[in-house]
Every structure is written in C-alpha cells, then in structure tokens.
Image (tube, rainbow, N blue to C red; front, side, top):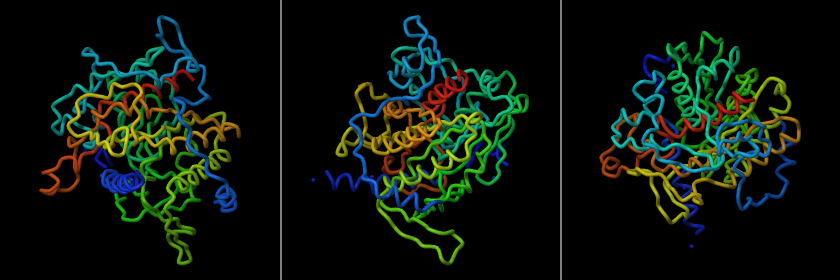
Length: 426
C-alpha cells in the first residue's frame, strides 16, 4: 500500500448470471490485490428470505439531525433523505483538494496524476431532494472527535474513503496538524496532534478472519474464511469511539473455503462451499453477536457503509456498461445497475435491524444508489498499477480497467460529507 512513499512507516439468464459471477470474482480479485457453532447451526436451519422489491435508502433508525436547505426550511434526517437526490453539474463546484496536493494520496485513486485529462467528473455535486449537504469542515470534525479514535474497518473501498477523509481534513486546515501514517500490522493510524485524535484504517476485508488478512499480500487463489472467528480483528477497534465498517466485494466469489479450527492446527477442517450469500449472512451474524457483547453503547458510534457498486454491466446482465472511457454520469433517477446486489444489501439491513432490537444501534449509510449513477468516476486505466501490463492487456484497456474504486477527489468525498453530517450533528 502506497500512501505516499514519504508517508508510510510498512461475474438462457441463469448461464449469463453464472458467467458474470465468475467474471466479477476474477476481476475483483485482481483489483483488490494492489465462535459459537451452535448459533450457526440454528441459523443455518432458517429458510432464506427473498429480497425485497426495493430497498429503503436509509436506515429507519435515522436520528433527528438538522440540515440547511430544502426551500429555506430546516429539515431533519427523518424528513430529509440525504441518500435520495440527483447529481448536478456545477461548473463552479471545485474540490477542496486535488490528487497532487493531498499528502496522503495513493496511486490507486490519483487519476489526474496518472493521465486522466477529462476532469469534469469533479464538477458533479450530489443534491438531495429536500435539503443540501452540509459543507465539510475539517476543523469542526476534529473538534468533534477531540480525544477520540475514528476508525474505518474493511476493504480497499473503505480505504478509498479513509484517504478521502484525510484529504478533506488536511485541505481544511491552514497548517496541517496531521502526522504521517504509522502502520502496525493491519492498522494504519494518522494522528491529529493538536486535537489528540486519530483517524485510522484497519484492513479486514471479510470482517472475520481469513487468508486475505495481510494488508498487502492478499492475492490468493482460494479464499479461506474462519467464519466464526472475529476476535483477532475486533480487538483492534474495540475501544474506538467511532467505527465505520464495510464488507462486500470480497464475498463475491463462485466458491470459498470455510475453515473450522485455526490456520496453524493440523486438525483443522476445510470445506469448499458455493453459497456466498449464506456465508455473508453468517459472517455478519458473528459480527453482530460480537458487537452486542462488546460494544460500549454509551460511548461508541457505529456506522456501516452500504455496498459501493462497480460498473461493467448496466441494468441487465446482457448489457455492458463499462466504466472505461466514460465521461458522464447516469442521469436516469430510476436507474439501478445489476452490479448493486439488492440481496446482499438486504442481508446487511436485516442484520442491523436485528441489532437495533437488541439495543445496539448501527447507522446504515446507504450510499449505493447515489454512487450507482457515477460510471464516469472510476480510475479506469488512470491509476498506479503494481506490476507490468501485458501487450494483450494494453491492446484492450477494458481488460484491466479499475471500475471498482473511485478517483479522488470524487464520489467518496460525498460519502464523507454524509458521514460528517451524522458525526457533527449527533
């Protein structure tokens, strides 16, 4: 992981869908490389629920947070849906930073630096229907988290958001008080000295333990998951004040291997399975059980980012809509791409609803739909690639384009504006 050399101290219709799943898994694998068994058995016996026809755009547990806008009236989070709106092109809109001026920028997201000349994607701003997003203020955020830990936990899309957050904060300060990134194993920490606060990222792409847990060396041919084991990771965010989770793309595989026992044990049992939705649900149940037992409910604020959509197909599996060479977003407000898996979203939402009934509140930030419009905002070929590209790849840019992550500045900045509004108004 290159956080700036000077900044780091270490997928008939069924056949089409099947082909898509395999293709997506292979593509994602390439792009992503750059304990109570009785409970599980009981849950395995439950009948699978069909996905809902349409997912809500925000958690029903949204808090009463006031925002400016909406025809001059103040709105609350329950009456103003920050996740429902449209992208508006605004020539006057300017990002508060660029990829050359953020000292935390990674080559994975630095699209201008790596040759993208069309920068119009930066001039589209998200406009909720009934209010305006609050302007991001890094100093206000740091004041709010003074003496606290803000930790992003998940995969490279969460890392994408973490880097965006660091760049937004840095650009808000006249003189940056942010220190260099310090790495300890999976944990990357940036300290704001003047505020005694940290903004951290913890690499845990599946949330539970797996053979993909190394933050750099996680390119594996077969993903092995200790589906009941989370403590190894969870202890690193246990005492955090604000935790932002994500986990999605690493579960999109034709098959995965479940491990019972430890990686070091000679008695461990391995079983290959092809039920990625069930595995995802099982892992989230383990995650939610851990939160119920271990979360300090008076101290810790929990967030879960909904899935970030990729752009290689359109509204149907037989419609290609690749991010390569795209310069405009999708403007049809009813658009929903097939890459935004409603079934997986429903699993997350159901898990969070159950947690809420058990007294643990997790704020679900449903950024999927607003992100799904932005087929123009991925790095595509404009990023740092680790290793040489073959002549075959170079002859077909779509074969190696990154349609998963996001250019910075870009879409994750909007995610952070929304996150900022929840944190500062809580």
